Amino acid sequence: MYYELLSKLSNFNRCHCGPEMEAAFQKLIKYYSGSRLLRYSKNEVNGWLRPPHWICKKAELTDVAGNVIVSIDESNLSVYSYSPSIDKVVPYDELEGHLLSDPKRPDAICFHFRNQYQHWAANWGFSLPHKVREKLPRNSKYHVKIESKFDTTKDLIQSEFHHQGKSNDTYMFIGHFDHPSQVNDGLAGCIAAYEIIRRLNGRKTRFSYRAFASVEIVGSVFYLDALKGKVKNIKEAMFLGFSGIDDAPLVYQQSFYKKSLLDRIVKFLLSFNRDEKTNVFNHREVLGNDENVFDSVGFNIPTGTLMRWPHPNYHTNLDSMDITSEAKMEEFILFNLRVVDIIENNFFIQSNYIGLPSLANPDIDLYLSPTEVSGIIGKMNKISSKYHCELPDQESKYLIENPELLNKFMQNTIRLADGRNTVLDIAEVSKIPFDFALNYLNLLKDKGLVSFMETSK
Image (cartoon, rainbow, N blue to C red; front, side, top):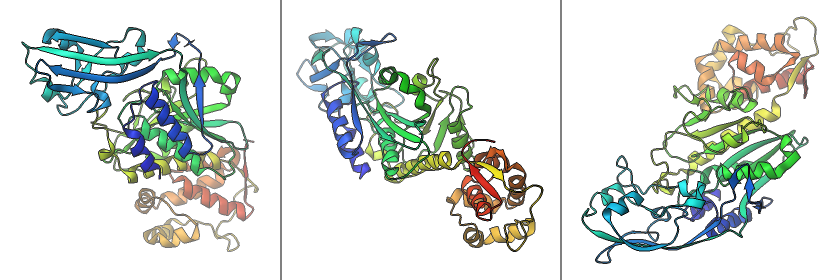
């Protein structure tokens, strides 16, 4: 089960490059048959340097009596990632500049990540709970001992999982696989992305789909560079973040220009969640990840971010399996599969009639009366049966509360079936759930009234 894999990988020291990062990738591709490792030996892309492998054998801070204050044995986050070796006794005044803690989260061990992006000038340091830091004597000395080394001969390693469709036009789901000993920041999004691709196995699709487990930002830079001309096949992408947080709702950060198909689809699906007042944000308004690489000048791959937010345990050891719900992970995966379903079924609709067809004709029987609709919706089982439509609870509730929309939807459908509008266009303008619109249009198709087309008229 993918939740068990998530748990197994959660405590690996997944720094940008290192032995445990490689071991974690190996477990990922072993679990997801058909996925593959990607290796990069190039030294530099656009000013970004390939990170060296960082191997840390020991990291410990002790007081003068030899009592351990901080140790990597407690948490991989206890030492700054990419800390160089040091064996030195220092006064508190010097040590203080090499400590990281958060007064607002006094029990947390924070993630120090900056070294990974400036590994040519890395600083040593330790992270510790702020309540521990406050108790350190200021007039004492401390023994700093870090045994680590950098290997510049090793490749940068990443992974992808591809589902080939009829077209090479590809939609991507991205997560970053790094972040030592953290679950939702990066790892859970990768597992969700790979699970989406696994569930497409054996399904014939119009488009291709790909999951990518990156080394945050720098890995995406190397990935797109290595694709060369094939990068044009990537039409849009979505970064997946914080997928399994137990008590946080889904939110979405839009692509840079806020005009992508994925922007439309996700915003549309979230619009039926009336319990959340604010669930759509601008590009990188909340935080930033690899979307800035894909959605950049020259590549121009519109990339939004779907995540759960807020995340009070962000960048700490408290981002653990304890706050990660399998049910929330599954909800996140199913939401993304609905996104895929909309991409796959967003056909252009062309009428086979001229003028106004009589949908109340008993041979058609697809008329949605304003008065009848109210009664049907009140029961929902009748309308679900007639229109072969099983909606998520929120969307069913929405239709129950807004029955008047169905008659207007019917009128819009008849008028907008001009070969230039898609199922999503009709659903959006009618404020009707996509699945209901699609099922209704399929019934019109079965009656010979409309045709589904892959391209516009």
